Image 1 (tube, rainbow, N blue to C red):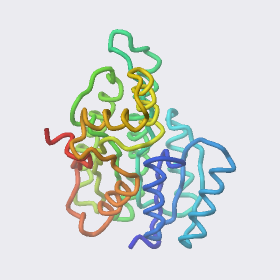
Image 2 (cartoon, rainbow, N blue to C red; image 1 turned 90 degrees about the vertical axis):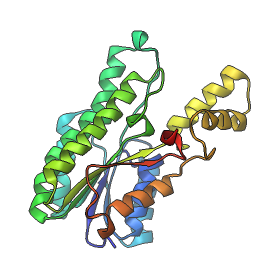
Image 3 (cartoon, rainbow, N blue to C red; image 1 turned 45 degrees about the vertical axis):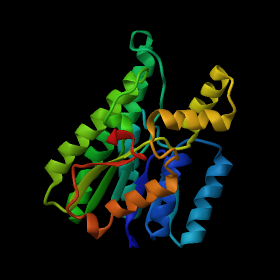
Length: 260
């Protein structure tokens, strides 16, 4: 379905981003992986994706907290591949603390990576997508882009902002062949969430299994984690012709979290 298309997925060396990159590669898009991690592990992922799907896959370790690096990632991709069709803004970090104790440095870092990086990427990618008369921008927001939770001031603010940005870009690009949408996952068992499960287990003296169930029970009525593969499928749908008239929207994939 996506043969000949070029996709950037930020924060794609593990977790949600890797799940999305895998699905887009399966649909024959060429992939630009982005993120940090063990060099050998990343090379194993990169070469595996390339070999298994007969597509081109490169890795760019651009730091999403820096404007120049984000814009450089877009420019380098267009220079290397001659085009850019899909931009998935997925990179994100988390920190929790009450708002009156929230460190300013953590606030700034979360907004830089979770929100500003998407703005810089979209700003740099839009002219190329408009020129091609086709493009898909998918911002990975969160259930926390639609509702709040305690101790997550920066994350919730950034994700709400990301959905606002999605709406504006959707409106500005309407009719150009370029769409912009947000995907709002509930709990996904990524390293980020694994840490929260470990903290709950330690604080309450629970097993990992019970801590995970308690985490889900608090927010997610399905009592099941969303999988990276499911999110990959959601992004793939938004890249399909069936989604040509879906733009400026926030799509929940959250086991019923925001239906409550």
